[in-house]
Image (cartoon, rainbow, N blue to C red; front, side, top):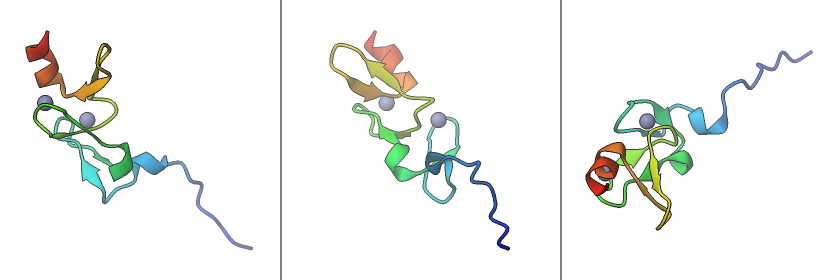
Amino acid sequence: MSDDPVQSTPWWLELGAQACDFCQRTFHYEAIYHCVHCDRPICPFCMMEIRESREVTCSECHEEDT
Ligand SMILES: [Zn+2]
Ligand SMILES: [Zn+2]
């Protein structure tokens, strides 16, 4: 009988990948976005999307933009 651990961690929350510059949490590199302005890594929770251009920015650049 194998005792498989339950996969409760989503693939994009796995450790050992890219860290978000804002919340300091670590995410799978494929889940990390990069701000089009400052090129800092942002996670899906911290990123802001500009609706018109569909570009992804961090919260700091987003504030400067508006
Ligand atoms: Zn974050
Ligand atoms: Zn930025």
